[in-house]
Image (tube, rainbow, N blue to C red; front, side, top):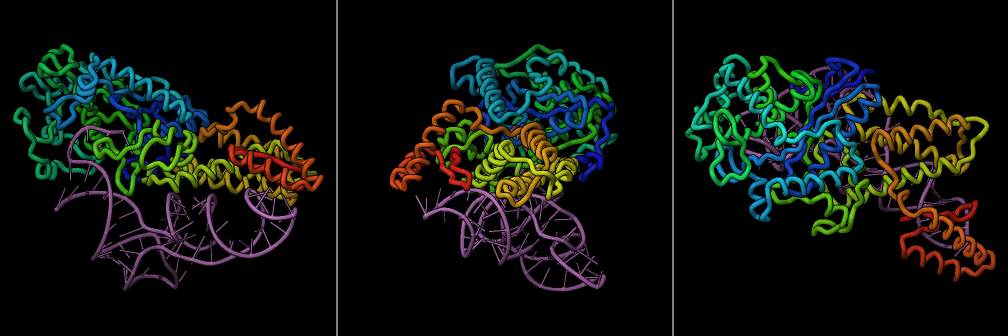
Length: 486
RNA sequence: GGUACCGUGGCCGAGUGGCUAGGCGGUGGUCUGCAAAACCAUAGACAGCGGUUCGAAUCCGCUCGGUACCUCCA
């Protein structure tokens, strides 16, 4: 079965055929760096990390571009107000670029914690002002934009006569005309739905650059169009981002590409769904977001305790990327417990004795996992398969099933490939000072064994209880005691 | 108001015409000095009402409920 991807443009799953195999170009909208990354930022990062990893696994040479928005776009509507980064800079008495650097570093640190691979290229909007100005110029030349008092606006009505504005989001400009709210400061525009390609900066605006039209800054949608074209070409395979960017951001990108180059830039549009809190979108503007650092430390009123980066990653992967995921402590704890079970399985494989033959056929699992991923990156199904396999491993441990040495090796590799390499999950406990702890535990368990042999259960229980208090759990098995971090 | 999407067991969450999703939790059992873990077994679901069909959680219609976008947002 070939890889299929749900293409938002046509609202259906399509077979993935790269424009220039074996090369694949993928562009994903990254963060605006004016605040700490929250759970909502983790979702697209992880979603497209999975896409990146799986495409490479299939043998494609992927160029993955994820931008950093570091140009201050406006807080309010397209015409008025302070820009986000400038506002933050003023509040904290910093240069805008200090704000950008600070939050970019913190974003990177969070992404590393979540084991998100670095993109191939991570361009910044401020570093590509020239490219954006060039593209605006092309759009003006082609007659799809007009100037007004130093600003340049995209002429949606004119564009719509030739192309169709709204083909991604399913909107019609008549509806937009009726439904767009009355906003102040729009008198420069011919129509309320026109959007800025270049904005003249008012004197208070901190971030501005010279251009043929005015001292100003590029419109919000320009950077992705310009940088996508620069690094991936006028046409490329995949463009991703959150569903909330569908309109107007991605719709306008499509319009800009067609206005500048006469054709679409993107073949497959992919959109991840939102993370919700109590059924409501987690978002900056709604002020109901929990930052990743708060998750990792547990310091937020909604959090009953801390959740590790891998728990967050697993939690997100347990839902399909096009479904909403509702945050709750219970769901997170269930995810954490399930994930730990999988890592226990991996450890167990190493200790297992191979049988003469296999009583269960484990070979189909590889194909099952591939099928799940090929079906629009269905990670919850992959995880379900890994759980089924985990059950088999436990049965072997209990002497209720056997696997040959070859099959055991196969299963070990399968977990390595799928759990670690493709889902990008790693056993966080491995990162502890395991060597020392290992030998300490050996000694302690030997003492407890002695106590038990002497029927000194008081001592045996005392050891178990004391360890339990520092989150170490003793598991008595037929073959002696084992231990695990709770 | 317009557009789009969704409503699955106590919780989370796949599936989308006939075949067990899976996890967490529950119940019973095996094991055990006890407990935990593990294993085995098991209960519990497709918002409601109509329709299509031999057969629908899955298709169609209506109703109810929810969410997103239409202003910056991942």
